[in-house]
Length: 346
Image (cartoon, rainbow, N blue to C red; front, side, top):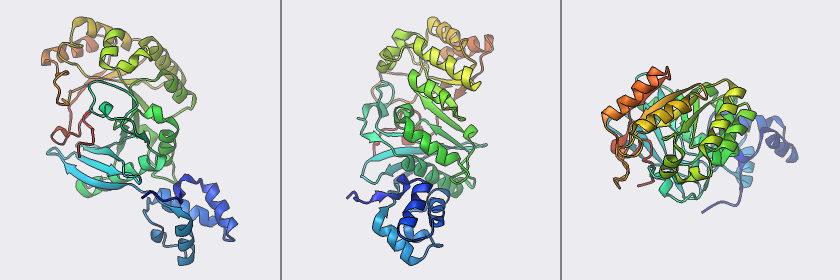
């Protein structure tokens, strides 16, 4: 049952200070509560041990903390962990902990379901129920940081917005969450360790640049030929490659930070010479690097991983033109935790 009380994490620090003054208490209590909420990530008012029982009872009477709950946890053979995260209203999203030898990465969700319709992605088959609030995004990161320390004996090092949903369709809440994650009064993580992955919404990419964000930008590209991209990602009919290119040029002009293009090569879809040449040409517009991503099937067989020869042809062409390229091997496939597989099967 959803509480009618206001979620206290919707209040700014100044609003918390005003609240305490309104009940005849000291304004600095707001600072203390803010630190508990964002710096220490507590779940209940009883955990605010430097507040009196009377003060905690007053908070309990007026507010709630709509904290997430990790409903189930699955472990992959490669150390990847997938969380089914239950929200306060009973809806569920998924987040993933991805460990490697050098880092531990949190892959977090920004929407329940997704606003877009990429045909290769299991999440796109889910109806978008709602956007996640900043605290719900923040809580995913806190939970994965705790799991990283527990299961891998090291803190979380990186965050990618590559989970369920299109981050730029939840712009305000995603940026507020990142602000809390990077602020010294929050988790204090460097924005240089955060990557926001978008399917490509030109207007919002320009807004990111105007807002002078400090994190990295990745674009789920998959084809540099408009007609083919529309077949793979039908929403691209509304977001033309020419407009995407212009927005990325704007981004680079404003930020001087290169783009990462995420690119899956599929058999019979984008594995021809014309596809390779189009990608090489697109990469020349803005300094970039290319992540060639291993495809993760979502059961229907429409999309199949291309041959090794096709992937190697992409690599050779990109390297010939001095475009940095890496091949990203998928992790967590045995628990449907890899890219494109998040679909709330649990």
